[in-house]
Amino acid sequence: MDKIKVAVIGATGAVGQVFMWMLADHPWFEVAYITASAARINQKYASTVHWLLPIEMPAAIKDQMISEFNTDAMKACGVQIVFSALPASVAAEAEPLLRDLGFYVFSNASAMRYDKNVPILIPETNLESLDLIEKQGYPNGGFVVTNANCVTTGLAMALAPLRKYGIKEISICTYQSVSGAGYPGLSSFDITDNCIPYIGSEEEKVEKEIKKILNIDPVVFAYCVRVPVMFGHLEAIWLTLEQDVDTDEILRTWSEFKEVSSLPSTPAQPVVYNSSNTFPQPKYAFWGSPKGMEVYTGRLKKKENKIGFVLLVNNLVKGSAGGSIQNAEAFIEKYGLR
Ligand SMILES: NC(=O)c1ccc[n+]([C@@H]2O[C@H](COP(=O)([O-])OP(=O)(O)OC[C@H]3O[C@@H](n4cnc5c(N)ncnc54)[C@H](OP(=O)(O)O)[C@@H]3O)[C@@H](O)[C@H]2O)c1
Image (cartoon, rainbow, N blue to C red):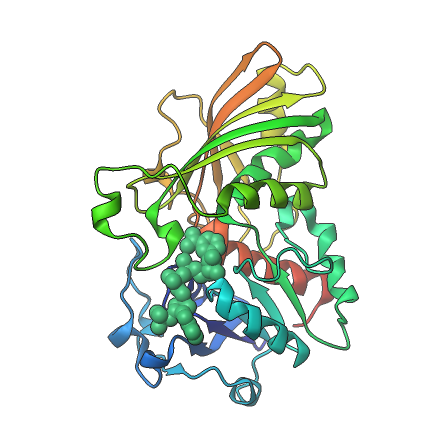
């Protein structure tokens, strides 16, 4: 069977690199076109990218040429799906244009996340939201599907199976890695041996997005903190639930939360709990199979009527590029483009 041709726009950034790594040997997709900013056009990927991942660059992508953003050239290459890892300000122009030209866009940028007919999709939690692409004009035209802000993705994964208990209130404090700000991100002067207790718009995004994804309306109290860690966002969470639930039941519910179907990028056990009191830690961000796609929980406790736990999400994999690839797989599985 022929693979589906895809483009990666913003292929050299932190998220773009994960796209390139994960798509290099993807069973359904073949990268036919890649872009970056103007200075890199007509250069070979390996000769210009500043490779950040703790995984060797796949040989197959090293010689791939970086092209200008040209939708006619993308069409000429047979591209149908576009994975976007552009900054929001650039995505705000590029993504609607691509959609209007009939491309199927899977984006990490926040530019279109809050549009009424644009889903913020996480296949394990709100697969039904994929139907919104029909309101954007599919199958006669293109569409944009977004994934959540990386912190919200981890939170939504842990909370989705707990929705049945009624989520009245969420208190969350995050410990977010520097890769979450892209490359080059913060100055080392600002983040070495230091933590910064503010990430612009992040707390607002968590509140807005968790409500849209899970279709719930809890009170949300959030603090988002940048910490001197390379990969993985840790989140310490307290929930107030409508029902009185003990920790054994929460553990059972997480363990029964299984993959929606066998998409190539979906782990068999999407939320993994470990009772060690030193789990989870950001150094496990690339654990699991597929690497970086599992969400880890630990430190579960109950006090009065509140349930507390800590989680780890790989912000670049499950929280961005891996999540987008999984969204495209969910689309293919439902609508059968192959
Ligand atoms: N990092 C995360 O954990 C994370 C998580 C979820 C969502 N996101 C979102 O994903 C997107 C990408 O994030 P990132 O962290 O990968 O950012 P990044 O490291 O800054 O990468 C941005 C990419 O876009 C390209 N680019 C920048 N300006 C451009 C322009 N004017 N025209 C064409 N290409 C341009 C860059 O090319 P050059 O390399 O040539 O500059 C690079 O490939 C953002 O919208 C971000 O908010 C990020």
